[in-house]
Amino acid sequence: MDFLLPDFTPAYPEIFLLFMVCVVMLADLFAGKKNRYLAFYLSLLTLAGAALVTCGVASSDIRYTFFGMFVGDAMSDTLKLLIYPTVAAVLIYSRSYISARGLLRGEFFSLSLFATLGMMVMVSANHLITLYLGLELLALSLYAMVALQRESAIATEAAIKFFVLGALASGFLLYGMSMLYGATGTLQLPELAKVIQSGKADHEIFIIGLVFVVAGISFKLSAVPFHMWAPDVYEGAPTAVTLFIGSAPKLAAFGFVMRLLVEGLGDLVADWQGMFVILAVASMAVGNIVAIAQQNIKRMLAYSTISHMGFVLLGFIAADENGYSASMFYVIAYVLMTLGAFGVILLISREGFEADKISDFKGLNQRSPWLAFMMLLVMFSMAGIPPMIGFYAKLSVLQAALEAGYIWLVVVAVVLSLIGAFYYLRIIKFMYFDIPEEVQPILFRPDVKVLISLNGLAIVLLGMFPQMLMGLSLSAIQHSM
Image (tube, rainbow, N blue to C red; front, side, top):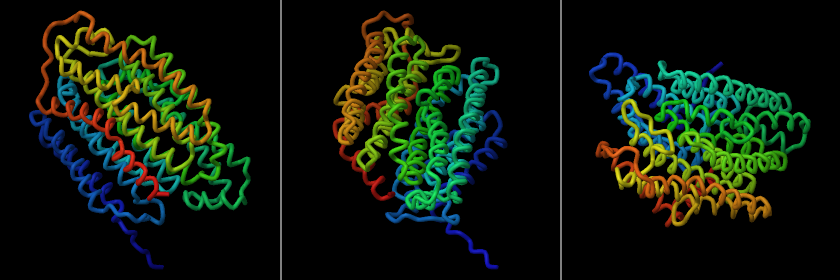
């Protein structure tokens, strides 16, 4: 029997990244403690190389490999090309922070790259097993990153909570997938969709499996009521790791939902739509209301994330190309805002001091007007104030939900968004109108100043001219469905 080798071309970026992770680990091993920055520069080089390889193999056609388990299409290429600069920005923002806390080690960078590899597999998965493998590679890397600061009791506690609840969610997801397999006899997402469309399988088994799958996905999105891990992990993890958890994985989670629910279970849309309505309303309500009571800014941003994921679900509820592209646009906007917010927190933090309390931002304008202005842009954007990107992101998902006939849901979302504006504007009040508790100026590297400036510029320009990014999102969805 002849064994035909699969076409490795669509998977070249993943193969390159895996090879470079080995190079980073070996280089760090032989470089020793004196050349710790070698792993940092090699990681950035790896991400740049992966972006070049992805551009090189990108095609307008949909390409399958590994016997249909892996797909290369416009959506996967677009999401990968967004994941690389996001991870690179996280590493640059985190450089001084992890150096001051003894985390500037090969483990941090190799785990970051392994997590990136997991995200890449998730967005290119065309098979239930491939989806699960990508998800677990990402999750296991994140558990280890949270626990890297071994002498910190709060970080260890956060890692244990994250691991236990993550394992529970993975169990839900795996059980749901096994139910889908039992009902259809296939693990291929396109074949799964065909069986559902034919109506030959037992609908009740599908619904039971769907409930477990949606529960697992909701945990990864930190949607209510599966959000309980987010505030504790955001607060307990080193801020650099919190930034990583809150940014790039959300892009992968969007790809995961698109692959599994839209492409695989698209004909069950009437069933998962109703679940998403409940999840969206609960997430927006709990996220925005509970965030008001928070005094720790990382916990506040965790609840902010929960509310933003509620808005992302609005696009999926619309269940059409415009809705999915609006959700993709929102996720990209959210990632930009998260990078800016945690970037400022990392820059204010220093050795022996974590800028994790809201009171630490008092009088920031007097200490560093530029950082205060960048944080102001981020807070305005998160609150949905024009002309920031956050305004257009909310407008696009609300418009998609409105066109789908969910008028009451749009009204609820707008009211909860207005409530949420309070805690964002409170940060601005602290920065510009309160007396600083410390007077020493904040010093940071020129490359980080350039990055935070570009971050702020992107938030403004993409809000003023959103057509390009919205067009990119719509094109990626249209050419993948």
